[in-house]
Length: 98
Image 1 (cartoon, rainbow, N blue to C red):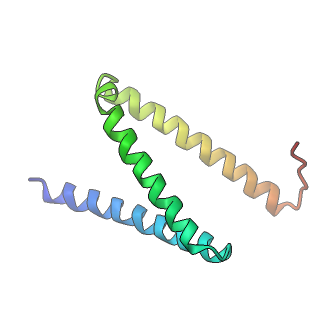
Image 2: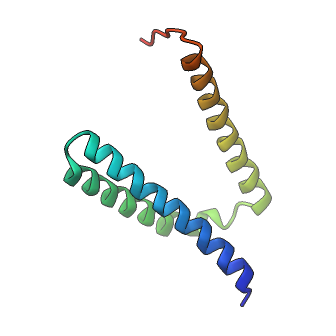
Image 3: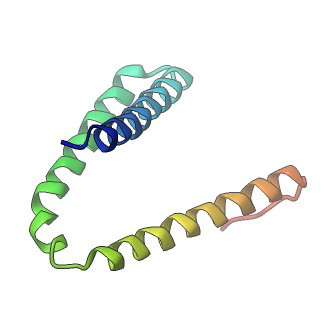
């Protein structure tokens, strides 16, 4: 067993899980409805697990490098969007969305 790989993967997953807990707590407490935030996160977790089980076989047919490229494009797109939102917000520009 590759202990360094295991430790790195475990730390990454643990950090993301901890981040999700803080997000659920923050939104739940801000909305004065912690129970519905927890319930929603449990439903989300169940949906992700179910999607993982159902899509495992079809996703194994996609080459690994193609999958990494697609995920990288998606993450870059999200990053560019949020950088733009931050710049607009920091600049005091009002946006009107219809």
